[in-house]
Length: 124
Image (cartoon, rainbow, N blue to C red; front, top):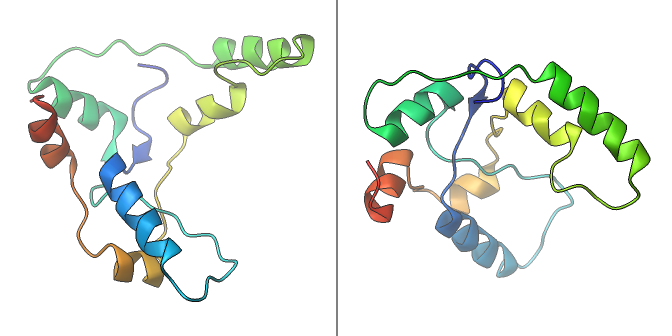
């Protein structure tokens, strides 16, 4: 795992994203506000990995500093977009928790949690 694994995130089911976007398209008036969409649970990366594996397991943590430095340098050297950028690594280091928005709550009152996602995918 890149980083400490202590950053918080909200895994969201792709089907919930589709439901929300479909409902949003049917709205008569859209504001220019940013709406963040996250799953119903706030987890750390470490907790998410343990739940996906279904058991306690050792997690190897890889320091991100050197990786971010190399990626930042490569972004300056190569003109084409890289498959992964230094900026994307920051999402692994810092909390990425969605802020609640009334429109999200109204259009998607029930969201699938990680347990539901895993059960439906044949995982843990």
